[in-house]
Amino acid sequence: MVKKFQNFVGGRWVDAESGQTFENRNPANWGECIGLFPKSGRGDVDRAVEAARKAFESWRLVPPPKRGDILKNVGDLMVARKEDLARQMTREMGKVLAETRGDVQEGIDTAYYASGEGRRLFGRTAPSELPDKFNMAIRVPIGVAGIVTPWNFPMAIPTWKIFPALLCGNTVVFKPASDTPATAAALVEILMEAGVPEGVVNLVHGGGGEVGTAITGHPDIDLVSFTGSTAVGRKIAEASGATLKRVSLELGGKNAQIVMNDADLDLALEGVLWGAFGTTGQRCTATSRLILQEGVHDTFLGMLIARVKKLKLGDGLDDGVDVGPCVNEGQQKTVHGYVGVGLEQGAELAAGGRIPRDGDLARGWFYEPTVFTGVRPEHRIAREEIFGPVLSVLRVHTLDEAVAVLNDTVYGLSSSIYTKNTNDAFRAIRDIKAGITYINAPTIGAEAHMPFGGVKQTGNGHREGGWTVYDFFSEWKTVYIDYSGGFQRAQIDNYRS
Image 1 (cartoon, rainbow, N blue to C red):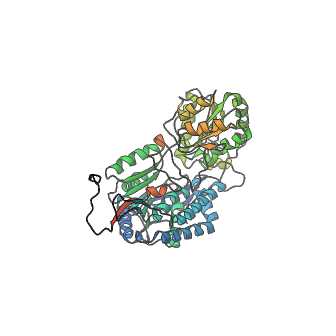
Image 2 (cartoon, rainbow, N blue to C red):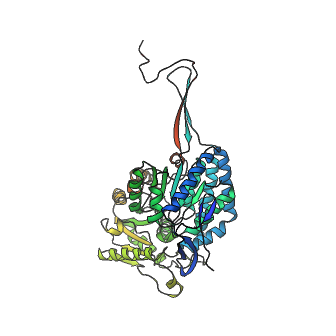
Image 3 (cartoon, helix red, strand yellow):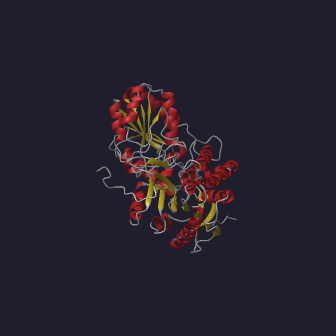
């Protein structure tokens, strides 16, 4: 029998108001149905927001170190269930088991980091301009946080948002991606078992057009954190602007790896293989462009094509598999459509470019790892986010040209350069327009205790991860304490005799 899942609202598991459900299927084997999930709507969001608003009044008064203790419990439970969570995630969205284990570990790291922040929500003190007066600024909770997350990191990204939100004293209404609802349900079960009170975290399944829109436009949601496409991010910013919500947007990317003539080519090869084809290229930080200096272009390209053709496609639960499926049929069609666009615009297909139809691969949404050569900066495959296993190779003459080509996109998330020249590395750090730059490492590999986010149309300036995310999920409150016993006036000319 197929398992039926429910929403979690006000501390209770409940069906959607409509009674309707949707299927969650394995992208590596579309015949396998993982579960049925509630097809929710605006009424379900309303009830979740009401529960979160009510719970906020007591949760905001829990001391931050005590909130941190609960998140420590969350991390411990995730450690104990790491393998089960990873296997479930691979069945839901397809990436290989080694990657889903890493996805869970990212959540564990985030839980332990957040736990420590319970004793580090530091404020500031400053001297007053008046005698016998004390000035300070403290951090306070904001209210109800709407959390909308994607399918490619179904454990890590929700934890990046939910754990800091809770640690800062906010309550949560959580809408996971419809492709990965089971992982979200498992996370909420862990949060409850760890000691999160009723109503503090509420889970509402359903589509972005129904549930996501209801969350971002809800007048009683105070802040929204969203990870997804730039197009959807714009709509969320517009909807949230009507009520002046605080909004954090982590959006698309068109990331590039530069390989200079003096680079360690073997190291650079491992980097681009992992960056371009890890998670089947379905990462906002994926290496979508490879920029090769002309002195190593031909040699490196030969090395790359030979390795790409040896990558093994298959079910991410099977040993020896390098690349799993696209998350669904629509994503597979999008990838194949961009391959057609690349060919129409004159790029040369050096590897891949096909939907495999052989054996077990025919049961899922697989796509061959694909490499285009002869790509020019103006080509669409060099400018638009594909979100699949497609790599565009561009040739350049100099470092300045390489950086210019890398910057020539509306996105600015991650970047990478391989070089043994320290001066070139520091020039790249200075001149690349991106939120993240790696030296002699691929464009993927963020760590939980460092800021994560980008510039230009990759986001709206906020950062997830590390210490910076706590500024988004808390409000600064300035406090003045006058112990002079008399009436003193600031903001006037106290310097006149």
